[in-house]
Length: 81
Image (cartoon, rainbow, N blue to C red; front, side, top):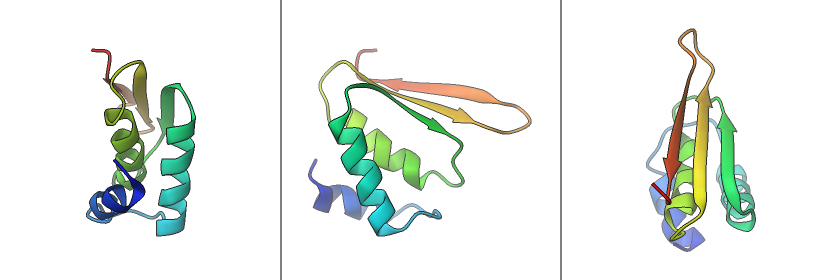
């Protein structure tokens, strides 16, 4: 998915990051291989940035989301599962 389409989807999620920050996260996640790790998310806007990238690859990509709450939990989204 290109940035224009990703930006439309990301814009539908409430969050604290700006469009410029979202584009940077999208670009960085696109450039790295393997697993993307996110620690903490307010309403999920940055998570959506990462997930769009991970979902766009056919294999060998994963997103680890670690939510820092009183009931800390980790969620894994993977294109290999």
